[in-house]
Length: 394
Ligand SMILES: *Cc1c(COP(=O)(O)O)cnc(C)c1O
Image (tube, rainbow, N blue to C red; front, side):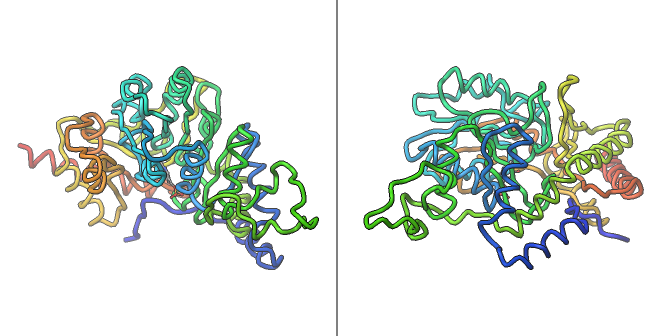
């Protein structure tokens, strides 16, 4: 029987040829592919700047850093996300302050975030969990009302549209991620997009060891009329968060095919929904309502009905895996990760909605080229596993 992975990158000859071209060019970092990749993606979401970085996490770190967020500051965010969204706050020495999620969209809501705001809150970090863009506009309004920036973690949402606005266009800056399980991949990589010139300039400098931003203000020549010394001139603490030309070339080829990729993902999701909509005891992912909204499918995550618990969910996942069907528990709550508990004293019961959802989710195999036979195999195996749980209950 063939193994069905949770996800699989979609690489064609176009990506392979793009990589070969870069390898032959002799220019492997800081070159034209990176700049073009930045311009194309920023243009797509309607932002002035794109800053390519080595990962989504690096992008979030740089955005928070360039907003001056540091020790003593709080950032309001969701406990139901991939751990990196909140880790980026920790990397700045600031405190992630969680607020509970909406049980339908699985995202942070403005109502919940507002209650978590204190005098020390310096930003709100919203996440389009599983690609669902719901509430991002309300989070933006809330941030504006409190005169603090919203950071949009769009690492799961590329290609989505919410109330006629593209994912990646909300708040002060947005960050995309290109790990192989995302809608498009560069192997490892990410991109910050923003309209804020100063933030963009700081991010460009910090991703490159704190060197002066080449697109920044023209500087006076250094003493002695030296104009070419910037490679060993470091204006601030920086990082090496650059994206290689090889990765950028893959990204460009993937972006070229983005529409087709999103369509294939939508087809797979529709096929799943069609086959699962009659199945008892499961809740299907919610597509945000409205004609002006497009869901960008990142993963296909179902959840068990409210009377199921973590043990039953874990047994179903184990059963799926035994039958070579990839499955996972996206996401364990961030506040319950051991080092969050230790550092901040978070405990079970702090965010009951997130915890209850997190105990019942099952991510199913989901990738562009999944065919109906493979989907049928997954849904059939899932049905068998759920029936087994139903029998155990009697
Ligand atoms: C993938 C992801 C990230 C980080 O991306 P990396 O490129 O793996 O560093 C951040 N936030 C969310 C919500 C993600 O899903």
